[in-house]
Image 1 (cartoon, rainbow, N blue to C red):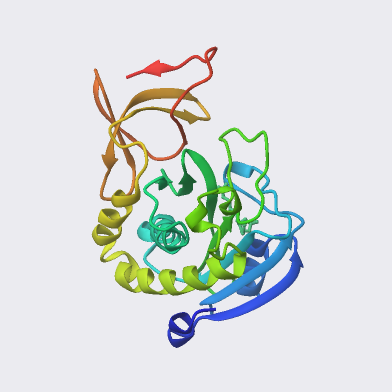
Image 2 (spheres, protein in one colour; image 1 turned 180 degrees about the vertical axis):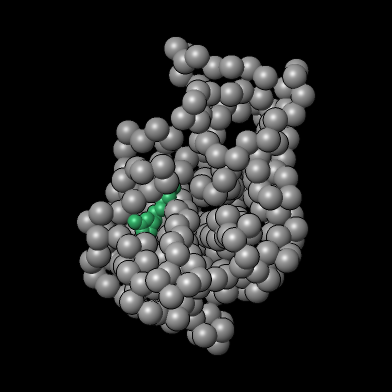
Length: 264
Ligand code: BTN
């Protein structure tokens, strides 16, 4: 872990193999851990992604979860995904020589050249003695990525730029930069008081702004132009019928031809 994170009282527990680093962090919280604890595993046998998906977790990639206890009032907790997204983009940016093809896909997937390089899974649970445990789980494809995913995937090792060939691409390098960056951005966020600053930074990395996107939700798809995110991080979509605010969903640039899209 980076010294900046250690100086801010973050701790690290490293494992060769776990079911899920998020599950371990939640279990530690229930067992009384005071938080500011990173759980890192070299591989996971039950890695979990957003919306109940599995997260392929062979050795060679980064699997890390940060446990925080009551980091903010409940209304601000979902902002943690954006804080983590900014920290993740900032730390990987240095590893790809600030290549502008690095971006964040709403709400918080890390993209490189329109393929998914990493993802964030935010989970929280009430604690028996009161208060709430929040876990920010982060996966980054360093040496491999799964095939046949709904959104194309990539890995740092595949970014075949000659200038990058000499750069470190292992999970330990990403984690070192990430632990420092997230410690700093959590301070800036100040438990939600300064989400405005996080929003501004997030928008610098945002992919697809101004483009026509499809948002896939459990109740169907909706199409429109991605205008921005609002003060709570919700996606603002514009179309002939005005603006619509989207709380959750998966963003795609191109929809399969046979879908039942609803243009707005
Ligand atoms: C997504 O669906 O994009 C989120 C993926 C999050 C994966 C990470 S890997 C570390 C942590 N442990 C898990 O089981 N999931 C998260």
